[in-house]
Image (tube, rainbow over all chains, first blue to last red; front, side, top):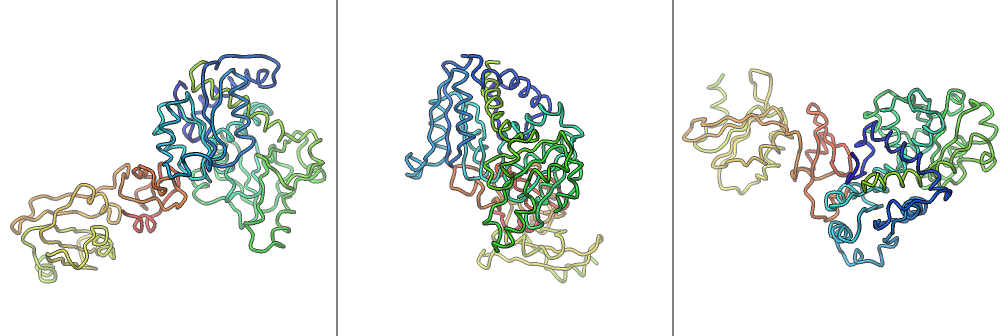
Length: 304
Length: 155
């Protein structure tokens, strides 16, 4: 069902496919931790094409491939490649496709992963295309929630912060709603989730700019960074950013078993004192990127 | 009624009559067909004409026929239009335009950061999300486009 499949957009994965990815990812956890060894991808080559800087996504893909015994080629600085000479992305992909068995691409333009998937014979995994999709992030976010609560259905999930420009929250909102979670969209009015994203949600979300108001209903606080440059007035930024800061005090009024997630990097949306509370799940979430990406690589290469 | 209309817009010998254009869209139809002042044949436009179903615009172009692609473009701005092909003053064929399920190569994506706007060897492609009002989604960047944006970006 997965061999040769491109992972471009979360919208193209069925519920069954997502469950299968999680099942495999669960088995990958001891290998991801280094407690067990595996060579199932020995002899396979992953090409990582990072046209834009990224630390976690690239490192976790490379770790995933190497933990399964595969090799990695790629670049992180497109200035040093033929792209700077004006080569089209289509040509770059066609060539890299000849060298490798699977391609991971991060690119500043939206739709670039779809283009790559069309030009490559081998499977392509989208590691973020501009403000577009970032399906492996979405999968690891879901996986973190599923591991915690068993299923997504019926969970009360608050997406907090910059819901307008935040790359991860758009596809996350889509899939959470289609998996029957109850969504709470918490943001300053300037950074509300765009209408075209809300239109695609299966169930109508609760929209508010007041986190305190819904605090005691929430199972998952999914916090995103509010970027200073989105605000014309720096004082306005400080005022807004402070309102959505997750602190120990705030969490004391939340459900006991609620969890706090963040796609990272964080700046000051989550106070460091929260790191040691039982609610903090963002480091676990970042780790989950490795087993999820191991599962995807093994599945699209057809070894599982 | 029929006679009255004939008086307003002359019959043509050979060419096309694009009828039942939604009111106010006649000039948009001419624009997407790239008809300006120098085509060497006559063009008549009737705007805000009474018809059986209310008001409409009509465009008549002499000595000009349409390609499939042009019919699709007309469907985007005037989904109710019919295109009559005239030979020797007679209607020899009547097309009702139809918004296709997929819109390929006739609209540019409105998103400047879409990969289709970056000089790649690609043909644009959109899925039709809704026909009335017309909303289309870029296959590449997944951005939705609404009627006004679509009209402005017909290639």
